[in-house]
Length: 247
Image 1 (cartoon, rainbow, N blue to C red):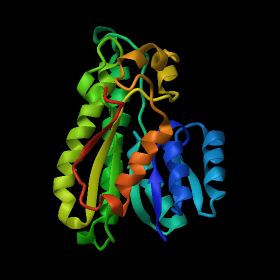
Image 2 (cartoon, one colour):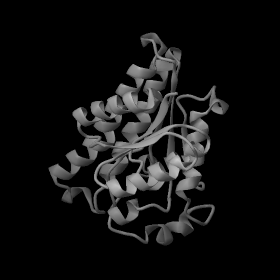
Image 3 (cartoon, helix red, strand yellow):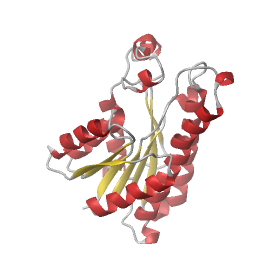
């Protein structure tokens, strides 16, 4: 039985998605860049549901790492069934005029180039035109793609706009090859990403701007991702689905 690869699966939305997939009987692989102990904890939680699970160290911005990651899934899980293209990076809040070249290249290298490399490797395995069994790709975007994130992280928002475009284009490109491609666009979600950007209390500060009056949880986003992967969404492709409480 092939497994689902969740990139950036050691924390937040990725970890919640991996656990939910495991609870539904899917074998799971989670990638991580540096937090091996946390990734192994997620793997242990997944195995409690009686499925096969493994963690793979990989820098999604490195083509060699991406190829090795997919080859590991092939060898250890018997192939790929679906991809959750979740891994992303963010830099501290700031204005564009203060961004360094290294910052911009780092964010784009993981969030855009890395996501495209992962999608490429998934298509090569899943496409019925290449002998695959078909499958589904869910890209994790952000409502930042529409909001722009001024004075915070325009670079991150721009990369998510690129993910939206890739989702729509790739869905049309591989629709007859047995592959569905969709994106979820989380809004203000309680994860560690806010601390990574320099403001751990960002959700509390902005919660009143959300029509539902609160931030969301990683588990709520995971439910949407897993639905998009499932046969219940069999006629859904090219969709950009906001999970944002109306924001």
